[in-house]
Length: 118
Image (cartoon, rainbow, N blue to C red; front, top):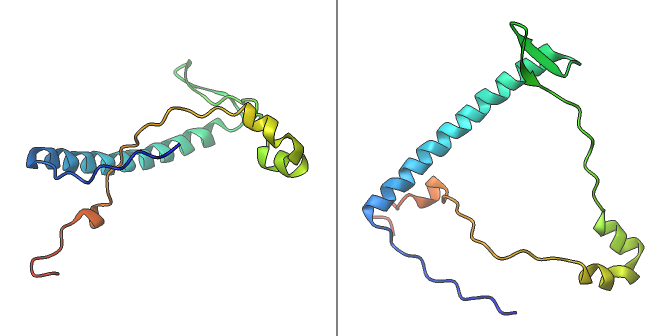
């Protein structure tokens, strides 16, 4: 299966570049809010101790339940210990549809060079 050729970069119009700046600002604010959320969650968990339910004025407001651990198969070790079943594993392997991942380029890398720079 051959890979599709990747189209060349496209120059974005100024109004779209403005949206990039909006996304950068939102991403920065999201990181700040995530930090605040982690701090708040830590305080709440410390107050809960071993309890699973936290009440305020007699009403439950938070739950910190014990959940069963996830069970997975260690395919790397299975392939090492039983190489004879590798073809069988491949027969049952599913590959999802290709997709596109949207990410913002690093702001420092996206900054144009200063005037007079090569």
